[in-house]
Image (cartoon, rainbow, N blue to C red):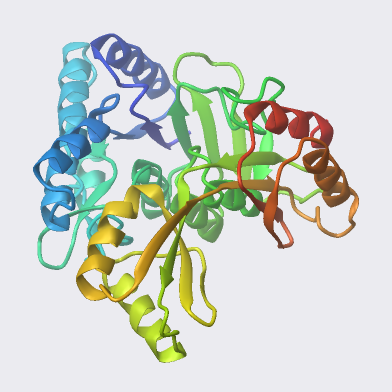
Length: 390
């Protein structure tokens, strides 16, 4: 095996003890592969802490400065890991996103990788170094640091795999693979040996914090498998690959981190006003899942993490509207071809009715059933999993 890309998440590098575990795993894999590139996240809950501290200074911090702040978390990790590996006799060098040649779009907080100039990475590999790259970040055309969105280190790793044509890309975390549901919520959640790119895309888009959705797009585009494994055991693992889709439920995702924003106007609303509102959201890089208009209101769905930003926008630009917020829960049932017959949907609706779950909306695609409900407890999700996933 010639080249490996390894990505370690925040829980894997949370403290010095865990950094030692990571270092030993890298040293072990270096015996099997000539070249190793390591991508790391910030340690533990560092990013959450930095966001909280920034919001104590401003409810809606300047986006450029937030990227400058949040990118420091990964820089701490790469330097610590490099120091440790060198002490253990394994040559290593740390590179920030811009040093690694990662060029991105200009959108702060959710930038997309546009190019990776791999010259520096390849030069360091030629010197025999393990190259440790700060995930989640790059640099835009203005030479400003940008971040790729929460979980963006996964995308950094898979993009580097494609750019240097690495043999494999491992995404390491504190979980031994990808599960059919959140094992902290569903007692019978089972680890999947394989899942297709399309199915994994639906799982990520549904809100499961497993893999960054854009890393899956890159893996599918370049035909590179992604292997999710645990940092702390050699057992298990899940391969995300092209595969052959089978008509069965692979995953059930509960997402309660969304909110519906309703803009009411007693004078009524027009399509032209809808364009104005929607464009204002886009200009602030706020991507909504859906946007609809009726006779006197606009409705759209956002992530709760963007609520302060959206409220500031609406208060400043659209004071004539009455703003109402509605909580809801989205249940997504994922599996290629599961909507080709009505068995799964019938079973789902019967169970929800039995447990008095009020359904607001249902939508179907080739690979998913999405059900919006007022609320649903974990016991009911557990029962749904037992019913649908064998």
